[in-house]
View 1 (cartoon, rainbow, N blue to C red):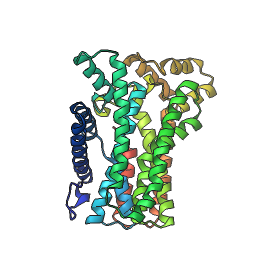
View 2: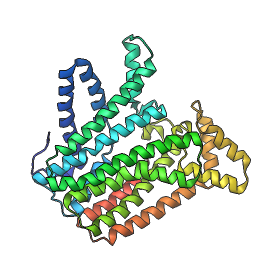
View 3: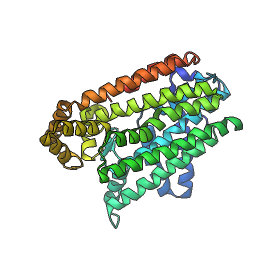
View 4: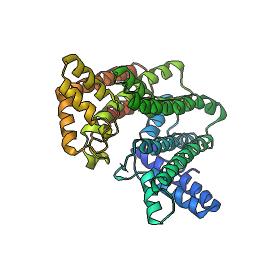
Amino acid sequence: MRAVGGNADFEADLPGHVQRVLATCLQARRDEAADLDPAVGSAVAELNDFVLGGGKRIRPTFAWWGWRACGGAATGPEAEAMLQAASALELIQTCALVHDDLIDESDTRRGKPTIHRRFQQQHRDSDYTGDDTQFGMAAAVLLGDLALAWADDMLHTSGIPAEAMTRALRPWRAMRTEVLSGQYLDVLGQVNVDESPEAALKICLLKAASYTVQRPLELGAEIAGATPEALTALRRFGSGIGVAFQLRDDLLGVFGDPAVTGKPAGDDLREGKRTVLIAEAVAAAHERDDQAKLDLLHEVLGDPLLTEQRVASAREVLTELGAVAAVEKRITELTGSAMLALHTAGLDEPAASRLAELAIAVTDRSH
């Protein structure tokens, strides 16, 4: 399954090497699927196109630098095995995105139709019998599950030593449970209307922070054989940066440019997401006894037909209530405490410096 030589300079283009590893792995899986049935091969081709068609490879990058921070090799067979183990994280990400888009009924991802919409369109184009929406939903569920199964396969065939695999499975298993638990709490929060900042932060931590930064860092560190002290420092750093990353994502979900984010403006509002941004606004409206602004927020949340004009009105309210400033403050504080944990950990270079650069890149971004 490996796509690059043992002496490759992975760090010169880490996302590119992750892409190559994924492409090689996914081509083999597509061939296997096509042998089962051409229709399965065609469906897998859609999944592969989704995986390889975009993404910043954030999770494998954090895993790699967790490995390097704790003494992992930069080149050679061990590094190559680590690269494949890290790349498996992209398939967990794929599962999460495909299912998340289905749950949220999203039309686009990365500027292209979401998986369930692709198969819905295939149903229409092929003049299949039955309901096109149901077909698209079923295909997305199955392909998301397939991506998750392949993630496990990719990790277990990566070539990392048995002792390292035993250590790696601790954050790996925790991460899978946490991201699915966070997704469930997110869905629950949209129907039981829990608008507290505490509930929003828990979802943020489980659904995003854990599997975006903290657990990938731990995965790489555990494979490298990190000391307990290094693991503790990386957990603190990863948790803070992970939450800050999601808070930035929440802001972009309302204020982001669709041309940059690849999703329609205000999609988080249409989906009724009770993010920290919304929780801060609701709390401020209650504190000020501003029923008009509170009513507007409740009207736009979960409205699938929300117009751009109403999105603009919601943006004004979120800004006027101080919610945007409050979230920006949280991002700054979380990033600061995470950087402190990183700088006092005594981690190996160049990993410590690269992790600091990554922290800024993922928390201060426009997409």
